Length: 99
Image (cartoon, rainbow, N blue to C red; front, side, top):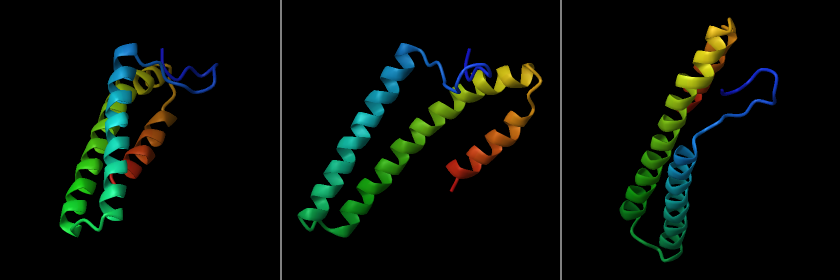
């Protein structure tokens, strides 16, 4: 079950999924520290921008994984329970992700 209406809203990812996302986020965190170091060392702008693009792609990948899991569990469960408001919530979230 995900996003149970009777509990505070929270998801229930498998341990494998959590491990995967945490690993990805740890790499992203390292990449961000690397970009900070590049800027401190006055690295050529194009090289820094390429690293920023890689970070954005990695964050998009994490977002895609989360969105897929959310749609397959939380959204499906709430629709099946008759809670159509979840569709508006999902659309607002997707607009934010697509900026």
